[in-house]
Image 1 (cartoon, rainbow, N blue to C red):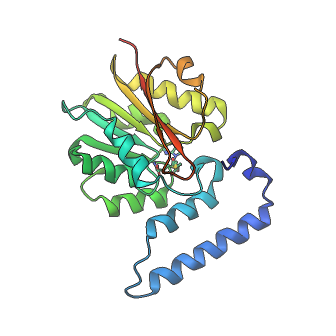
Image 2: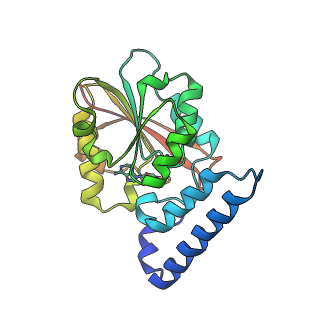
Length: 221
Ligand SMILES: C[S@@+](CC[C@H](N)C(=O)[O-])C[C@H]1O[C@@H](n2cnc3c(N)ncnc32)[C@H](O)[C@@H]1O
């Protein structure tokens, strides 16, 4: 597993050079007519170079992992499904393919370029280019949230930041509301209990780089 906390050890000039090369490659690839490259991957890598700890993964989730995450989302009711840290949109696609109605889905992505890409890829979904730490303030109280699906790399963020985000999720969910989070870690992070979540279930998905777990957490009644 790649430890993105050590991304700070990459010398800044090398990181700057990599960002310049990626930006030039993006322009060159987009300029080639008929070249069918997955631009989502390119935008993802550019975001990774801008903020290694905030993105926290070398590649987006596999389709297998995305499907397992989407399968944990209940389809009944018309409460909102809020996806936070959507990246290039693989999980968003899986949620829509599972049958979550686009008008029930709200997607938060902090990186502006990724958010722009998400809105292009899923024009019927409400995409918010913003920090999920403020999701209640941004969404207001009009539409209740039933489930939160998180791709935010809690392990690579500073502890306080990760805890704040989990507390915000707990406050936004109703009693018995569910938070679905994927992780590469084998142990069960204590952070969730600190934020008021109880563990419901865990599923292992081997077909991902690296293999991952899908955890369901519940806000106690
Ligand atoms: C590991 S990527 C996951 C992308 C996608 N869900 C997937 O499975 O491929 C994490 C994403 O979370 C976003 N992110 C990190 N912190 C965030 C926050 N506080 N609010 C919204 N998005 C955030 C990053 O910009 C990045 O795109």
